[in-house]
Each structure stands twice: as structure tokens, then as C-alpha cells.
Image 1 (cartoon, helix red, strand yellow):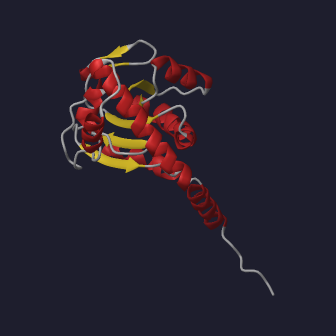
Image 2 (image 1 turned 180 degrees about the vertical axis):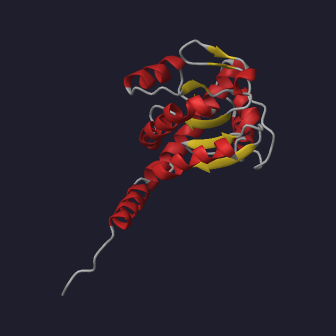
Length: 205
């Protein structure tokens, strides 16, 4: 019996879906670890100790949803993990693709090279990527970026960023803020490479 002819793009898409399904259980663990690390670091920043059960629950509720699409976002000044500082005015009239990530997140590891290519290709035309790490130290994040040759901006996620863009559960998370400072798109979970390339459309929207 002859076998049906399969188009190459269909096989590629199916393989990507199979890979995503294969990592589904790992994704649950990543989400749990992300929330635990973020909650601990929030508590340490606020008072130097781990949060209580009540404060952790309140923090989880605050992180549960990003702002609605169309919300005007005020991006704060940022100190990058390499020590450079970018004022709030730096983001003016730029499309900013913000990604929440961690060095131990396997989905982030696969997605970051595609975001890096997006940044390298479009930084000169008004689209830049800012990666916000929930690792325990800037040194850990900077070491990872250096070892993997990633050129996009990178800083540590903190309460200012949580106030600006929220903190949904899971990793990675992508927010797109347009030239008009409005929230254009939010993606929770690993994105397909072609969908990352499509983020460039916001340069002209």
C-alpha cells in the first residue's frame, strides 16, 4: 500500500508540537520553580527574609495577570547585568520586547537565540529586546549570556517591573510594548521561531 506524501512543513510543525507536548510536565515544574524563586527574591528585596505564607499568596495573586492589551506602560530605568544603566527615556519611541526568563529554564534556553536574532536584526530600526531574569544574582545571568553569546539587553526582574507589566505564572513570558508605550501583545510559554520573527511587525503598527 503506498504511503501518503507528507509536506515538509507539516512534518516540522508536528515535530515542534510533539516536542512541546513532551515537555509539558517539565513546564509545570518550571512554573512552580519560577514562582518559588520570584516569591523568595521579592521577600528578600523587601525585608531580607523569605516571605510568609500570607505574603506569598498575595504576591501570587498580584502576579496572576498582566495588564490588559492597550494599557499604557511606563517602563522604569534599568540597571543592566553588565553594570550599564539605561534611563527611562531610553525606551521612548521604541518597540520593546520584554522576556521573563531564567538560566535554568529549558524553554528559555531554546527561545533565547531566536529573540537574540530578533534584537540583532532590528535594534537599528527601533525594536529592542530586554530580558528580565529571575535568577538569584545578576552574575549568574551575565555569565549565562556571555557563555551563550547573547547580545540583547538583560536586567533583573524586580518590584518596579512587576508593577509595570505584572507577573503571570510560568516561563518564559513575552510582553511587547509599542512605540506609543501601549501594551500590544503578551505570550506565556515558549513561542515558535516564526512567531518570534513576526514580532517585528510592531515596528510599523
